[in-house]
Structure formats: C-alpha cells, structure tokens
Length: 401
Image 1: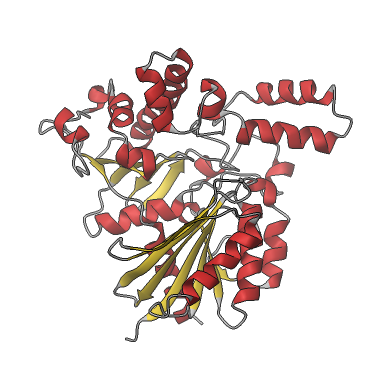
Image 2: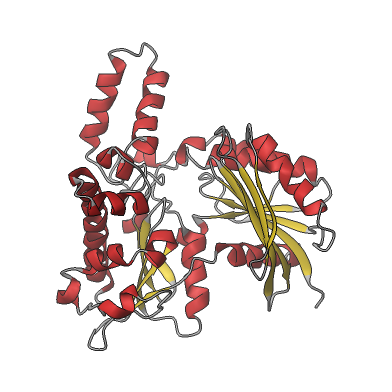
C-alpha cells in the first residue's frame, strides 16, 4: 500500500500544534512535528518545527497577532522544507461538536455551521478549532479535511452515565454527558493492544484533566460532562462544583451587568479561565510552577494541588466500585506521565484497593511500570499519542469514501 502524507492539526486558544505523517493502515510514521505558540501574546510568540528524530528544522521567536496569522505560518513553514511531502489529507482534533454530530467525518461548510451552533459545549476549544478549519479549507482547497471528535470514544456511554439529572425537555436539546480526551484514551488502548485488561482506569492529567472507566475496551463512565468544565479540577477550570455556586456567581455578576447574555459570558469566563489551579493558588495554572511554590512553603499552591489530587483519587475509588474491581491503572497526559509527585499523592491511601507504588520506579525518568512488585493492581505511565489516532481515523474515513 502506498503511504499517504497526512497533516494533523490541533488548535488551542493560543497555539496550533501540527504533525506530518506518512501513513498506511499498518503504519503511521511521523515525518515532522511543530507548533505555533503564544498567539496574541506580544513577546511570547514562537514557531518551531522538528523532524522525526527530534532535530530542529526551524525555531523562531516572533509576534503572532491572531490565529489567522498563526495558521498562515504553517503552510509557509512546510513549503520551506521541500523534503516534507505536501498533505493529501488533513485531520483536525475537535473537542466536542454537537448532538447532531457524533461521528468523525469529512469537513464541509454545512458541518462547520452545525458545530458553530454549539460552541458553548466546549467554549475554550471549539471557536479556535472552527477558525483553523476555515483557514485550512482556504489554504488547501483541494485536500480533504476531516474532524476527529474527542467525544467519539464515549459515544456509547450507558444511559446511567450519559444522562444528567435534569428535566427531559432539556435533555432533548442534547444536554447530556459527552466526555472528552477520547482520542487520548483510544491511544492508550492502541498501546495496550492486544492485551487490553477487562477493567481499566485511565487518568489523563494535563492542562485539561479527566478520568475514564473502561470495560473491555469501551468507555462506561467519564468525569467530564456536557462540557470539559465538568469533572476534575483543571488548570483554569472548576471541575465539579455545586450548581448553587454558579447561581450565586450569576446573581453577583448580574448586579453590575445589565445584559443576561453578558452576565452568562462573565460567569463562563470565571469557571473556564479564572478558576481551577490558577484560581485557588492565585499564582499559576502550571503544575511545575506550583510545585516550586509548594517547596517554598506557599499554602495556596499546596491547597490547589491537594484539591486536584484528591479529586482524582475520589474518581478512581468511585470507578473501581463501578467496574467491580480494577486490573490496570494508567496515567497519561503532561502531568500524568511526567509528574511523579502528583502520581504519588493520587495513589496515597489507594492501598486499600491493592494499589501500591514503587517510589524508585515512580521517580525514575520515563519509567513505564511504577507499581510495586506486591501491588495487586499494576500501575503504568504511557504517552498520549493522539496524532496517530487521528491519522488512523482519517485513513479509515478515506477508505470508506
């Protein structure tokens, strides 16, 4: 089978990550990867590109005014390296689409219009993703583009996990649990295959964090809900919170905000951009910064991290009960894979479930198995390989016509 050059794009609010692959159904070989970072932040912009061996092909500090400016640099950068093949297909990560779009599929103007009606289902992610979709269609008009949904992995959640305790008339509008980080969870299953355990819990911990219970390779419950705001406390998002808190915030904001829509937008900003690790610590949303602050005795940083690790531990305990036991616990994501202190704090007191970490393994660089020899439940760290999953779906959709 002839290998197909595929470009993968992952748009964030201030960055665009991209990767070039030479792919067949049997092999997805990375050719190069890069990012445009610091979009809209004067003095913080950067554009870089590395080959598959990690050698730097381009690294430039440059002010990037907006996402249009940021995206325009990607085709120029790829064109400047003729050794890189031009893409014959493009895959986009889409965090959450809408109740009308539940399948990975080819991008059309009608699809973009449908997703745009539901931007509040993922307010931090969907607007920049839609903007990059439009730029990509304009830059590569003859190349098929596809969306791969972060919620697709959770599409068959059982009703008890999918349903939210609200009146049926609102549930009929598509208000239910969608979940996120599904591309990451799918990548973990790919790495575990063919020996996928019956009862698996995966904790994806990063700037956004979630945790999922998986039985026989299928998601049966996941922490994020209608939007990525739910579930675990994250870098700037609240995670699960008493709905009464939202009502209190809305009433407080409404005192000085005449428009109901503007008041809702303000509360949305509070719970999505000003809360979480950042809001509690008052310092940063970056775990590395918080760890340094904790070492210096900062009590607010300590509280923020304790809220984070305690929430994860609670979900693990709940999901063990839901699964009826546990055969494997996996940590992934930037924090999950690289922060040994977070893993140790999460697993504290989980020995009652037979989960025991080995301190030396846990702190070793890039150790995969971190559980003790006597642990009844193995604990592993695995990388999040989302790009390869997106490439696989693009190939599948192309083959399906």
